[in-house]
Image (tube, rainbow over all chains, first blue to last red; front, side, top):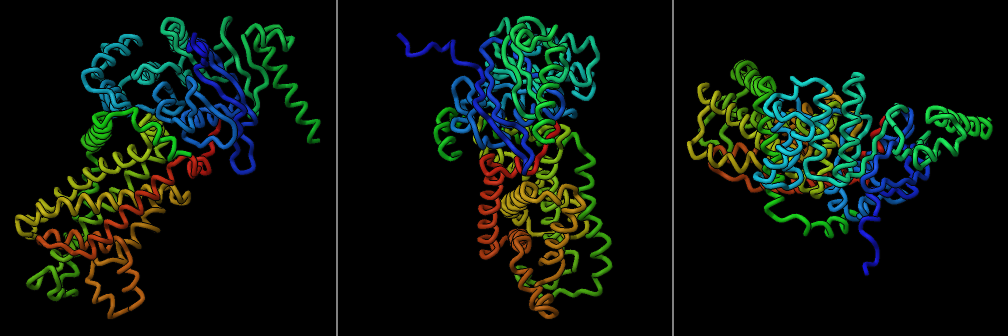
Length: 258
Length: 281
């Protein structure tokens, strides 16, 4: 008998993480988990702390208090093991627009130490997955924003991560492209069993069956299945629940300070 | 924390994989170099302006006596050529390090730093890639200068290569260190005023140090302590098939110190990045 079941290790486990910039508190005791092959929506307005959280998970900033584990690997102690299981789509554009799609992907593969023969196979695979095979030799500059997003997702998936983080991946996309990307990533998490953390301020990007984390001013206000979060808040739907939760938090804050 | 962490991680990648990573970073820098011809041209025009205009104008004013490594009187143009090569590397080092950090739009730095390889390896590879570009620029300058009758012994051009690699590495590491430490230097104009110009002028690039000594002893000591002086002298001696051991030691020492400092500065545990950045989300 195994001491614990591998399948039970969360893809991402954030345990009471706090972070501040000078005196401004960006994250206040944040805890959340992303289960394997789940689609978890991190819902928060601009300034809620989503990007700070991403910077901590990706080890851009040091974790000062609390712990972050990716498949059980502590980001602070075993950064290599943790980061090799992680794929990220940053909010800021991360592709080099002057070179081709393929060259961008080759660069990424090198950053993961993947030999060139294997790289070719993987590139073919991920481009096929995002339906961009025919654009592999095009310069990134010549793609639409939606296509660039798809390439960024392909790039994030290239080294076959088990956890995918996306920071506001639909910013700047039209409704159709937004729906495509969302649908696509959702399918990925289902078929390939990838744990997905999807950060957004757009409430309608969460749907039934997703896990939802409501992050507001650096604190987690609710965490659980979408139905559960809505039910607990007493709201009619997620939008209502979100407004109730954040409204109540703001009210508390007003009362305690004023 | 990180030292222990990376020690634990080290065996997860083979040496071959480290080389794949290095090759990828160098290759990408080469592609950027090919695609940004304006950058290459402007990097070349800058020293040529100094050579064609400044040096021509000062030729009559500034005589250069026979000092090592020169064995005869040399024209002023010949004297300043090594300094201009070092200037190419100084600009290149500052530019590539700064764009790497401040080019938030492209998120290039984030892409690099989420790689599972240890950070010291990523930064060293990145520096090496930038250095190779500056070496190409330096040789392109020397080709044009050759037509301007600045001719070094043939083997000098070969002996120059290790000197260029070392000085380029030192200046690149300095740029990386500065970019990580000082917020005020976010734009290039600030770097020009506070780093490039003082380093360039308070050095042996434009005038031999004995001349500086005649006018100000204090300035002379500043120049002697300036690592850029030693980068220039390392290049100057190498071009004439000689080794300036003092300069070589200074450049080596500074390279190690700057690189070590830059790696520390980019260590998330030290938090320079965290202290500076303040993202909206």
